[in-house]
Length: 269
Ligand SMILES: NC(=O)c1ccc[n+]([C@@H]2O[C@H](COP(=O)([O-])OP(=O)(O)OC[C@H]3O[C@@H](n4cnc5c(N)ncnc54)[C@H](O)[C@@H]3O)[C@@H](O)[C@H]2O)c1
Image 1 (spheres, rainbow, N blue to C red):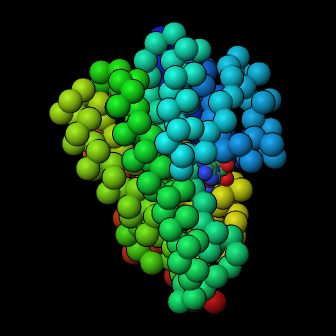
Image 2: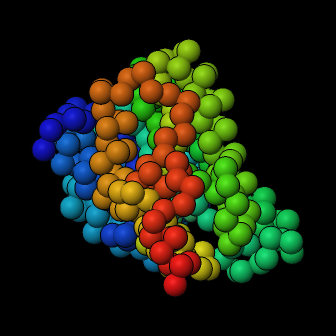
């Protein structure tokens, strides 16, 4: 299309099926001339269709649990071997809360699960950067993106402990963004995406209501997974070299709204 990622090498986490945001990013990255490896947790590889995506993108899938440092070390080694050099872009597209999955109310959380939520959904972002930095696997001016949600700033009752995970994820982008910016001009950002019908999204109870409410509140409507992929590609490209340590809303305007005419009309009935 625009060859925005021509010659760039990357790692894309979190593609599970064709609805996954990461799946859409992989297809667009390929279209824009990048080469990359795909990775997901071993258990997700057994259930998912990621091999199909790998064939389509002419690449390999490297199993890695993003909570395990040794898995991430292998992920970088094998990625650099396969791609023939260091990494220019990295997508963190990983989220899971056992408390949300098992419908635990926020005032009756299982604390072991809470720690798992944070480890899988937030610390994994730090681990991906720390391991990559220590292995000297990241190129100068690389671009690193993770996906977040506005529940980091505002309360959405059914989002449970994922709200804390996203707040931590965004904070890690600022702290590590400073380090990597200073040392290698690498940028680190999070994209705060509209509700999107994926496995992770629809696992939240009341998701359909979230989706419809956000659609009616946003002047541009909800951003789809494909829209999100387009935005990610711009952040991986050379056109955004001075954007770092930001949480970037990609939500059709939702985050700036108070109330919309559609919502007023609905309550007026
Ligand atoms: N869907 C939404 O409404 C929405 C909105 C804003 C942000 N996000 C975020 O986007 C990201 C991608 O989610 P998605 O909506 O595409 O759903 P998804 O379910 O397709 O992707 C989540 C991925 O996380 C992976 N994962 C879980 N545990 C892992 C582990 N231990 N190691 C490695 N990978 C692991 C899953 O296998 C899956 O591929 C998540 O961070 C999610 O919170 C989603």
